[in-house]
Length: 408
Image 1 (tube, rainbow, N blue to C red):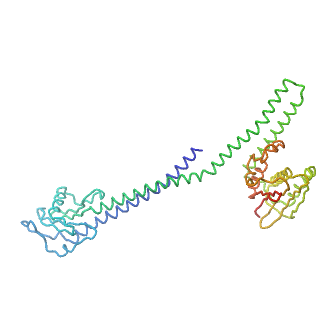
Image 2: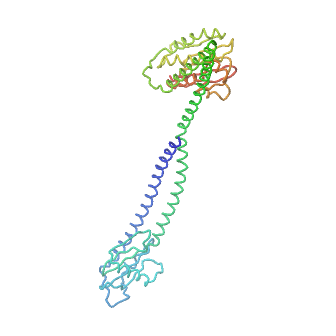
Image 3: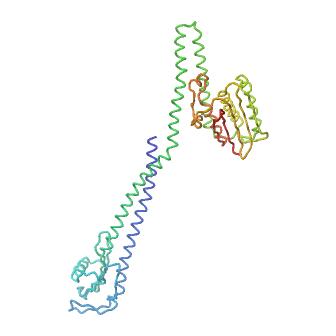
């Protein structure tokens, strides 16, 4: 069970993590591409608007600044951009700062000198680390974009998104654990019921086996004592009934085949089942009354419905006191409703759902003496499930009613 839980947790965590990682990477890739395109656009716009290819600065002028209003008018609100002019000998002859950031011309010339030495036509670089991006046209000009603000923005975006990613992973861890517990809860409950079932069945088989073994040993030492044979026979019958009940339960739990279903007269079947128990009821001094609406038909497995009626009627007889009354009713309302009511011993409060569990017994000693193992109502519930019906039990005012609702 632990291995299953680990596998379910790993699958849920992996799926949610992959989704979160995709969002994290996608967001940062989009942010980076937007910044990259913005820098590239600034380089291209500055180069185009300046029309630097037509500039012919004198070779002997070191601080030449062309009187182009178009160049002076180039301003960038979101970028720091410089234009460095070159003469015919590829020497720096002028600097234009397109931003009001107070950077001196000498600092810009130092940047341009580094660019010239690298002899790259254009380089934007990795915006997470590159301090500058530039476009270099030999014997004309160099356009330089300061990446400081872009680099800071991208790094901040990466940092905050990484922080959110880690928080999301912590939430995913908790969510995956909660989902794992919810998904595996039915399996866990089934596993626990299976363990309990094996323990209960082993306990029930252990007692008659112990008696049989002890009686066999006693009989071996004193063959003339017939009571040991009677004990062996009695306990063998108990084991036989238990095994038969276990087989019925196993069949009812695994039954999903509805090939034996056919539309039949439910009214006649219920009436026939009730009449079968008249002799048993008479011996116990219990009166049977019925209110069965005629002509009610149901798509059903007739044998299983007879078994259901036998279980409910047997249960009613066993829990009725002498002089009590058992009522069997069948009617069609919105749905088809079958009820079996007995007067006498009721269901303990809060145990209405538990009575349908395997090996449930309210009175351990009494049920053991009567060779009852708490499997009948579990079988009845499985028969109802096979027919898409719901079975419930309720005790009040000295009466216990089992109600089965078949969907019309």
